[in-house]
Length: 288
Ligand code: NAD
Image (cartoon, rainbow, N blue to C red):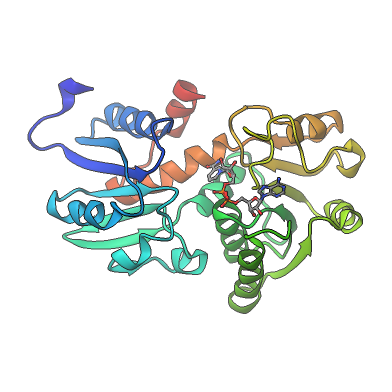
């Protein structure tokens, strides 16, 4: 990679903490190299306190933009000049684009989720989705799915600090889109089971299934699933989660981990920065 960096190379960042484990630098730099684009993508460990200086550096260094991840996805909003409408509804930003010093915030997690289904020739528009979780990932997924035409979303959350966010998501979806959203307490297991039985897709965005909750799943009984449904876990480490094993035991035809979403949220950001399509098949073969 060093051989292709010269005096004209344009920098794109990733600002989060911790972030050294991220696959994004390899993903983007491999795509730049493949397409012979003169960009470099670097990860910077940036906390909330350091964020104002880091965002100003995008302007100072004339960077093309940056990804942001936790704990900066919400905190970055007041530091930007403009917000894409979807980012405004989600209340979070994961991609910044710098146009001559004007910084615009986008969210590509939700579009990445929807695109990953499209990649599998699956269309959930007009259908019902059951979603667990209402944090960063769950909010982006719910709002983008509603904007894209999913007919009904049943959101289940436990009564923790994210419950209010789940209430907010449901209110926004019902007010701003044609989708009907309803919030349920995850402890109501009968309703959880019945709603899953009634939906085309069950998506878990809680992170249950990855460390430190590896080998756990919010659904443990294969009989809750139908063979013709979609079961989607946003977790990608491990590649096969407990939820996916339960779904596979049930014979579910379409079972996914979060790698497709990860790839496509990156591809959406790549397009915003470079105007080019990420060579996703090449990256998928290289990294996954
Ligand atoms: P978050 O902390 O913002 O939200 C977590 C959600 O899970 C909340 O709604 C919380 O109430 C719920 N939750 C937490 N522990 C739970 C438990 N034990 N039982 C039931 N519900 C529980 O987290 P986030 O940023 O939304 O990330 C969630 C998951 O999504 C992580 O696994 C993350 O790796 C994954 N993710 C994947 C992608 C991707 O591209 N594939 C992108 C973003 C996040």
